[in-house]
Every structure is written in structure tokens, then in C-alpha cells.
View 1: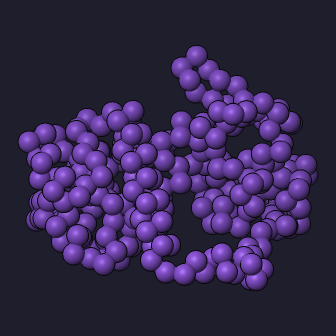
View 2: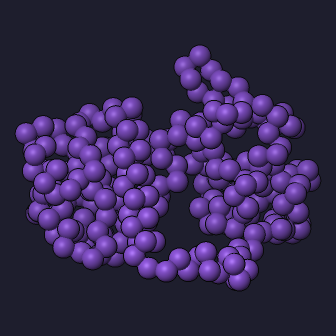
View 3: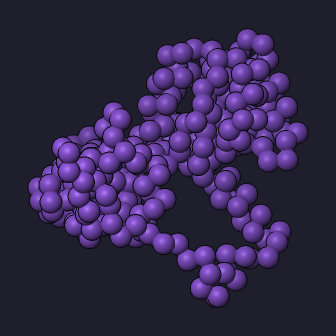
Length: 253
């Protein structure tokens, strides 16, 4: 899922991006806008699923931007953000999924993200009911079955190694590369995590944080802190933080 943040306050755009990484790690922020016209341009270019939209912005205010977006054939889910609660009625007239007051509270943002998921899931169901279930037909014919990665080509120094996915315990994103943790040690690849997640078997590899993917069968235990934070401890003793949103995947463990 893809999102755009539109707000004329640079600090808010930065903090909201960081908060979303914790509570909604599968949501990728693909653009940030500082005014209304820039928000519309980004929506046309990126076609996001969600837009976090400030109401008071230069050029066009958030209500005007939402009105324009509602005319699109495929419109993004809108979450309004503002310091002024008197705009609530106008916001929901534009079919906004939620309305957040500044400063944004993380628990309140979590609730908004849950509502976004439900809205997008309902939209997907409506689209599926509107036409033939092509995915089911392809599955019956065994056509279009995804091919997941079996080997990773990774570097260590000047050498290139072929590593079986069965040997990999985790992928950790760094500044410009991704570190592969495996039985052979640590290696480097250039593939970003969001691209890897589309190539890895989802039942075996889970993204537990914006910067971390782990192999589920190599998890030894989950450690929970006094504040509710969770840490994954792997069979080899490595520890990886779990984001608040991803912690829900381990509730039954």
C-alpha cells in the first residue's frame, strides 16, 4: 500500500512518516507535499491508496484537494490532519475515513490505520464482486502461481556467494544496502526490503519492522518488555525489535 503526506509543516511530515513506519509498516510513503497543488500533482503521479491531508495549506486547502480527488475514478482514502476541530463536519462530507487533531497521538493514529485497512479491504471486495474471480480461475488451472526466491546472490568483500533461502534467518535494511544474516554469516545485497517482500514466501518470511524481515521457522522466542515492546530472539541469539503493528502477528505465539 502506498501513501502521500500533505502538510505545510516539514516537522509534522517527518514525524508522521516515522510514526507510520511503526504502526503501519506495510504502508509505503511515496511522496510528501507542502501545499494543495503539490498534493494533487503527487496524487496524479503516484496514484496512492491513502493520503494524509492537512486542511489548512497554501494554494488549495485540504477540503478543496479532497473534493478534486473525489472526482477521480480511483480515489485515495483520505485522512484529514488539522489543529482545528471545527472542520470535522466538512471533512466527513468528503468521505474521509478519519480526522486527526494535531499533535497526533500514536494510539489515535493506530486507530486511523485500522480504519484505513478496513476501507481498502472493503473496496477490494467490491471490485472482486463486480467481475469474474480471475485469481480463483487461474489457481484452478495452476496458472500464475508465484515463484518465490530459492537463492540469494550476495556479496562479502570482493566475493559473490550463492545463499539458499533455507539458510537465511533475517534481512536487515541499512542506509544503501541490505544485510543478509545466514548460516554462512553476514553478506550484502542491494535489493530493498519492499522489493524482497514481493519475492519471498510470505508464510516463511515476515516483515516485523520497517527495516527487518525474519524467517519465522528460525525464531526461538518473543521477549516482551514492561512497556509492551516486543523483541524477536532468533535461534542463533540475534535480537530484532518488533514494531507495534507487527507485534499483533505474534499474539497467538
